[in-house]
Image (tube, rainbow, N blue to C red; front, side):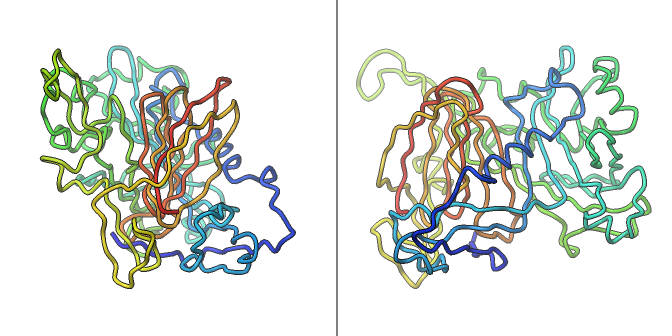
Length: 418
């Protein structure tokens, strides 16, 4: 999947001896403030909150240029000093009109997936401007989740509490959802802000129960599941007014989003099983394959990366011919302790792959696209990391990690190239 450096992004030169005041208007702090403003349609107790993942779309980035003598080199293709971190750091970003969320909802004895769609209601949204600011109490949306498109346009009502048009789609399998919810959830159902559509949100919590999964390729288990633990979820959306005659549809291409963070751990694995006398030893080993280029996973390509002509390969050289590496090479391994309210800022690596492995604690992981991909919108993908889980960061991706707790967070990082 070829990466393109975004032509509209801007790089700011920092001429020595000037320095950057990272504490002022910090992009990670601003992103966390946006996250705090995002409101699901029922009260918090009706969600498994650590499962909720967010997509916040953006269309413009500002980065800092290199430090030292190379301060005026603003072309990322030639910023080849691997030891200069300043050129990796994000200065600012601009959000677009939409954000999405998915996760596990729970009501009574039922737990299942939900999908949340939200569109800015202010006069500066694209749809509002196109409709001469006459949108009314609801808009509509074309929605396709995975390979399934809704047969009808979905009604997205205005939520006065958030000043956004919002729709939450639950996969509830009973007939009494309203009676199981609180006042906030019932109000959302009454205005059409929570709907049950098992054609759009699919799957149950039992699909990935540990029993019965031994020696199965998890990619083949419930592949259309809205909360599949390892397969990406692709979503296609276009927004329209109530009469469906004025559209914000990304120039007719529709907006394409993807929950696709390479996130692995005890509950996010390729294969699980039990091995007797492992490697000629004795006893029983319970294993989980989480990333692999071996056996049936030879074609997964998850550990590999595409190499553009402006990127270093694992040998530290460049080639004018685009290529591909099948493996993850490692130049460094670091242990980190993030103190309470410490955040690794939003930054990018031009070339490298990197793994963030949470050894102890809970943090908020942020992933996004520095480069542009033709297959999806650039978004910040945000989800919770707990001990025993890790994220694989690909070349051209933004990333950050924030300790939101009052306890230390222990992190192992390893990767290479940049």
